[in-house]
Length: 434
Image (cartoon, rainbow, N blue to C red; front, side, top):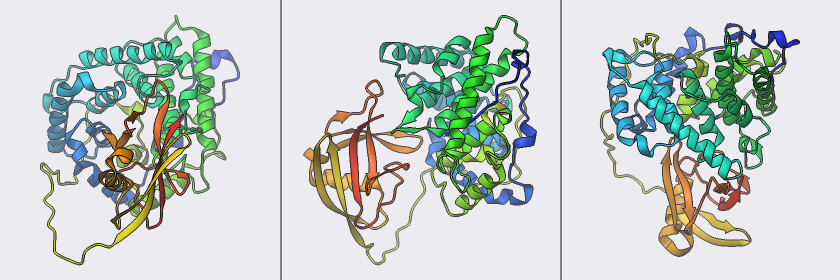
């Protein structure tokens, strides 16, 4: 799952930018909706629908009307219990996503959700992000993707935020939009949605600083240009995983680019091809691409609108799947090179793993063979396991350090739990800054 807006000719028009959304959206046709079923299956039957990481999937499924009423009731009830039991430990972005998911449409079955309390808690977490930025050289507690989600949720659910502060922090030249030296398309896309929401909420308000609105328009234009600068020849925006949210940003910002800069249908058709080839096996990846293909954006979240329910019946798993193992020929083993690189020091090992293994399996095998040099820790995220420590050295958002995954000298866009390794690969976990 990285754009351009034209500032109106006169300041008098700053408040009159009405998105031409209907003209720009290229949702999948009714005849091709069946091509989206793998995405829905992936989300509904994933273990992530049973934890806080369900937020992405639940938001996407409810926003797109992909659940039947019984599924909506069951998954929403389950998710509310999870949010209530884990809220103190949630990051600001996790809570923001949870609020968006619960409020994507009206709560099912007369269910009561205390949005005001959730939004109040989100406001406190957002303030903590801002304080950390003030104390640690502009670095938030989490990252700018989560900060932008905070602003988007606070805006949509009438939370407290400063428009001047938003205009200040979402400046597209801020270092936090970049990761590994490259503009983060999905971060920029969520920032565009947040800025668009904030701008829309100012319409009709008299006591708004015109300079703030001008900055918001300029920043949106710049972010759109940056996203479009990452467009690939086949129409993807950044990479396959950032494309969905980037499409949403372009949907709500048609005044800031022309039809020659982006052909929506080309992007859509490439994504459909990728779906057929199994590119969206991770539930979060499926969740982030589905809304755009259904002509939806996160700005369509509305806790007071009636939910649309699907007539399709997708099986919802309620327990861990039972996997039957049939005795067969033992899977072949492959050898890969694995290194931990810290500054100028490289600790290297050759390990054997089963063919079809992922990066994480290699790390586990290396740790088993030499715990001193190759010990590591992970934390569970919506994208799977994330490496937080190697050899006892922990990643830090305040210091902008992380453990970078590389294969054959190339930075990986996939995580340790999803990148499939191949015989002879040179794999590295490298101590890096961003």
